[in-house]
View 1 (cartoon, rainbow, N blue to C red):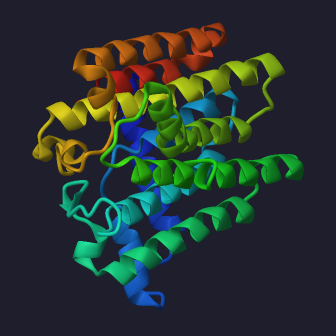
View 2 (view 1 turned 180 degrees about the horizontal axis):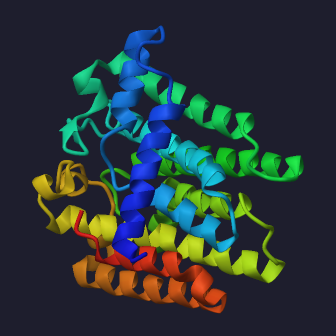
Length: 295
């Protein structure tokens, strides 16, 4: 299967799994469940599920296990977007080409949507057998918790809030994005691999390095697109970071510097998994997709 066909198949598979694993809209409290489904379904590139499936294929995981792990990560991601768009954070009105959750519903509902999606993600990981050894499944729960918490996504968001309106040094910016964006992308990749056969220590280290580089690469490209692409192309408000005085790679090292950094990170990611050979094909293709995407 070529990459485009594989990507479409995984995206469609993920959408069906999310429809099944989210609470049904008719289940009380209906407004909350309807809003949860609004925030998650029918949009997005599904980059994290794609990375989860690609790493899982490398480790020989079943698609059924990968569906659950991918959906758990995507629910954490969707919760973060619902909260990120709130007036007390980025105060945005557009996400994935449609009104943000608090605009479509209201602020209290959007807040509860994020809370409920976070809980639902951990419920999924705890309710399905994703690893042959229960101890490995506990490790998976720990990995996602760390990626979403104060030493991961939430911590990165806190640094972002505190940095608004002031200049960050490059190493400070890198730490912020390793936590805010990179931690969950890393978790998606490692969770996918953990759904399959255990990797040798050296292989696990190579995959972890790839995951860290790709996580940072995604954010660098995101900053470039925020500076160059239109709102219609992105499906969210373009130029928002600059308008709010948020530090980005473009503001810190310039557009050319950001492009050079993206190319370097792509090379490091490629090198990290070169030893996997054909097993790493989808990861290679996804890294290329991330660095060349236009939305």
